[in-house]
Length: 249
Image 1: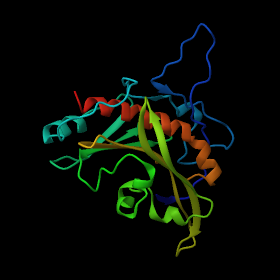
Image 2 (image 1 turned 30 degrees about the vertical axis):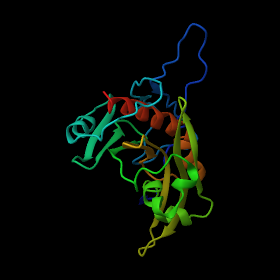
Image 3 (image 1 turned 120 degrees about the horizontal axis):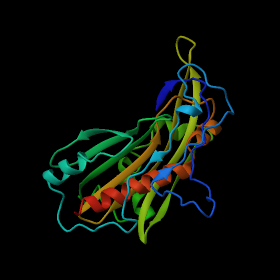
Image 4 (image 1 turned 90 degrees about the horizontal axis):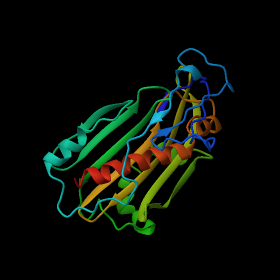
């Protein structure tokens, strides 16, 4: 992602801490408490503008395994799903793939991209990390990763296996930021912070990415604090949970 470099107010997004005994945590929300570490400036948001992120309410169970390829009608239904406090934008609908993007209505902006499609031998490799890392699967595995990010010094590039209510899934995580002067001596930044889960049952596939989509912070450390990795994981899991049950219903 490329953007002009701005100073932004840091907001630490994370899970709610353990509540007092008389309170019950809400598993459908991720808290955005805000911070005064850096004062807000033009185009930045303030802690007063921040809201808890409302998550889709899923089944908290392993995905439903499908038995037939997703039909165009089913993909159209999936692309039409809407969630409270998220703006939806269907990208692709048709016989081969469904893609829809959701963006938080409040800042800092977080975007979730959900991709669902029938399987083929190339796009649905076995769910083990070594297979996913093969060159023929690189375009799928790194589709959410800006290629220039791979060359950023100090960038965090991580992949592995995640447990999703007893079901193994492949994940990809990256965090990086670099700045440079353009031809007009203005400072610009290339940055990215995202977490993706990949799942397929051999018949259909589902990919979910949550990523930071707001102004560039002043450093990679600040980018990591604005929306912590754990928040991205919670958001991605919530959308994966919802769609991996909606596609079988």
